[in-house]
Length: 328
Ligand SMILES: [Zn+2]
Image (cartoon, rainbow, N blue to C red; front, side, top):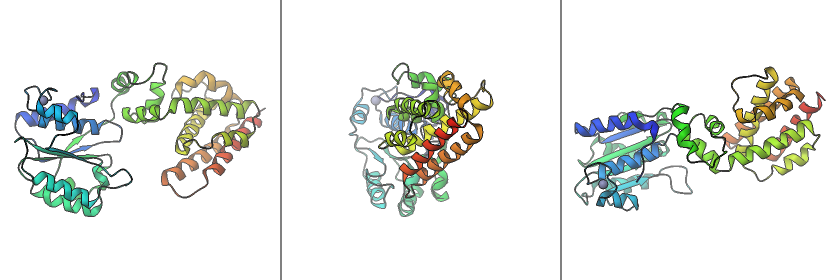
């Protein structure tokens, strides 16, 4: 059974009060940044709505058991197909057909759209007609990271449930319990801009190890005279957006430390002691030029324009070595 997350208390209270006053809306939009667990919330809410026990979700009834094995006939979840970037009109047509079928167990018909903003314009228009006059038993749960991308006509049909970034005190115990011990949980959370699932994703992609390797390379470039082209060659085959993210945030921290070695707000706080001697060796003006190169790399990665990442990585490595040699 999906557990409720420690930072979703307020949202569950709202759902409870809707349910108790029998004002469960036909369409609910879960709105908030990526990585806050809205997908988990949508699934657990579906379990609550389809549970046939008393303490919902009870985990033991027919509804809960069918949800647990992904087989409930009154439930449908729609996301972009594996090789697609959007939710198609065909998927929405199948969804509409599903909600108009009589409920198998006499309760709700629940559909989840996640991320809802990935519906094509045609798909959204097709859904709108059903949202305007939904069948009595239907509950639509739309999860959206960027709800502004959805047509206003869709948004106006939904009751909004907002999700905000949890305080670190709420997120960190949850995150730490899911990471191997010694993982830099605070750093991962900062890198994910405070989104707990985002931090978990970075960790699961081997982020912590990748960062250690990269930091070792930067020390070799700045302080040990390593050959920048050989170092950049070692970055070949790594996830370029990830390398870009580490390079940018490590460079920012080095700039902070170069300006003030007691700088309070480091992203990589756990590397402070290891970074201090490196920062001392680096030239501040060249560090800023390096940061520009890192930001350009990230900008290109995000926009997925065609570019040669290896050339940019080589450029960054050369600039890093130059920033070190300028001071030695
Ligand atoms: Zn149940």
